Image 1 (tube, protein in one colour):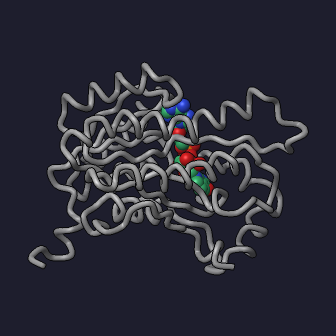
Image 2 (cartoon, rainbow, N blue to C red):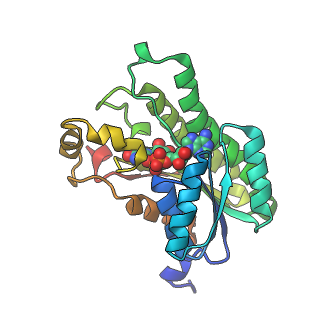
Length: 258
Ligand code: NAI
């Protein structure tokens, strides 16, 4: 053992792509892993949010690339990987783009079901597949998927069946790809956050009594902070997690331990 703990957490010299990086958890992760030394690109399909993120990061002295990316579109994913390759060999992929559809199954139109599955599960597959092509050539890479506690449990707070199904799929895709690529130098892990205050949960958390209900079910008694998810992603992406693959790490204040 020659390196020091902080060296193993360093991402200096590594090129990273974060999907859904214009907002919430993805944006915070961009800040954290840039500070850890990575050269980061963020991809997102919300162009206004991308511009806002770029301005916010510039103000904070953080420099990174922003790119239009729709993770559900194969040609968009391929194009972004091509652009990232011009910046350096991609070593870290964070699949963070996500969406939900809070409706009972009997009310859920097929198009909404498919949209949620397309973004959360198919998008994770497509980006991982394209990223792995270059990672496998170098025998080196770390993929971190953003699942959810809702991929580990059936829900139970309000109906969101497409989200639960998609995130459950992400958890098992994580195991599957981890096993397929383990002998070729690529690790694949996931984080499973409980509730974080972001644009995705804004309307949910504004509902009467909802926040109290969620806190009552969280052993540590508070919402998750974006940086707490970003720190877990940073750890899994780094050499500090060199012996961890196929794992989903809850960042949930004890929710799934109950
Ligand atoms: P957010 O809404 O702030 O960020 C999600 C980003 O994904 C947005 O910028 C959005 O434009 C982008 N996106 C959506 N569809 C896309 C597509 N097809 N292609 C590219 N980008 C796309 O939400 P948040 O909360 O930061 O969510 C990030 C991830 O964390 C999601 O996968 C979400 O499911 C997951 N998560 C969030 C939790 C929370 O409580 N906020 C809890 C557990 C998991």
